[in-house]
Length: 404
Image 1 (tube, rainbow, N blue to C red):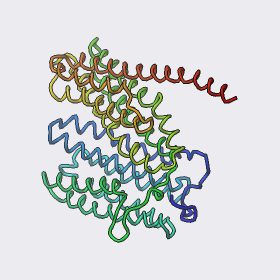
Image 2: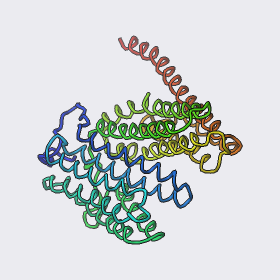
Image 3: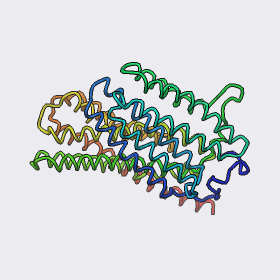
Image 4: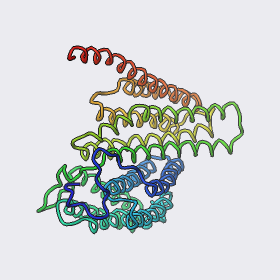
């Protein structure tokens, strides 16, 4: 936050050059979102139409936003303290109502979804405001509360509305929240918050977002395993299962082998960790998670119909999932490294080319080819980074010898 004397008694203690660990209470909170991610993928699978995809995208963006806001708040507040733990437990209850409402959020449970979402967003911010002494930091909490209260009106109105009107009102509500962060919660008279108001413990934010990637990948593997368990174990279904599993491992490798650690190190040492956290972790992780969820939908479709004709929803999910994932990771790594990863760019191009021929392939063959592309991207990046590190060592040694 801004200054030490503006931190309340419920805030995490500041420890220079020390990484604030993710607490067990935060990990327990995250378990609710395992369920939420599962609900989103199942909802998309059950209504894979243009309007269904639009509705599911909105629900995903809402789930991501309520989770990432909580991660920011617990970066400041200390979950080891009882009041903050109680807050997280209440948010878990709200998250369960939110998650159970997802399949029928645009039908009979729209108001339940809206009330749960708005209560989590506004209630958590009121708690932050009450926990913060007067000063710039408290004013920042006021700004956030103003924007979230405005969006809550549209969430509740959408919950009371029906059909197309609900989609429009909820789109407006979500736009208000996403725009608010981009303009640093500007409000009349008081203006926008400064970057100094968004000082965060970077290592904690990086670890929290990496944890959500694990949640999404774990959900993908669990759904694949559950679907496979109910099928006859033929050569085709076994092949589809293996392809899906290896594809999930390739995604893990692409994100965690080098990128996650480099991001955590950079944000921990950054002079403006708040700016980096907002771009690299709040926004650029959305397509990464969305890509994993969409890939899980593709895995389910391929497992149940491995030798059938690849219909549009199979093609869109099988290609779109890895494509979104690579677009997100290439932008994320560009933010932390300053250059575009060639392997990721090649993978994006390869997926684009494959899309032209995808309808002529069986779902199983399409899955195998997309998995192969992801394996090549992972191996290419690992080899290129290893080679780059090896080449830099002699130059570094020569420089040290010259200076000596």
